[in-house]
Length: 209
Image (cartoon, rainbow, N blue to C red):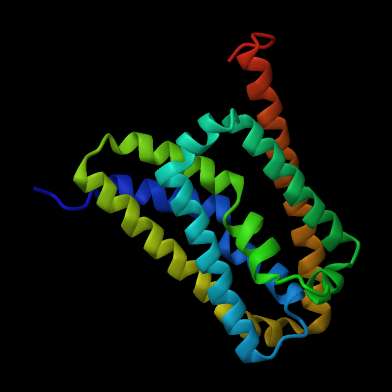
């Protein structure tokens, strides 16, 4: 009996990698932790990944129950997540990332890094769908867990060595990449909102599926 379904594992890892985009979080991470020491930055990376994995895991196990109990649809979750990401994107474009990182009482490792950037609606919805696709098969469940472990390691390493990237790019390079990331993040969040609206309209029969 196969303990791992490599085809399913690959599909899960690639899909979540594209959605979460660990390399794309590096400039955002650098901006939000610009005033941190190397030790604080490493800890922030670990906490952010831990929060993201915890959130995704909880929704993987109890997501459908939570949404059904609160009468929330997947498109509604996607829409709200898109709005949250759009707010973060606008702050990055406006050069207010330092304010996000220095706000009293706000831990950037939790918000916005842990959620919604890493453990966001896109990843949550995708994992919930993958859980349904496992069909209770042990090999697929193991593959899903292994894919999550590999993705967590990838996310941590991308942020853990962000300082090396910062030294290579320099201050101007980091600022430039941050602005570009803000544009891309705004586009991603807008697409999430559009997809959610389309799902609503399809559900109501206004547009074809």
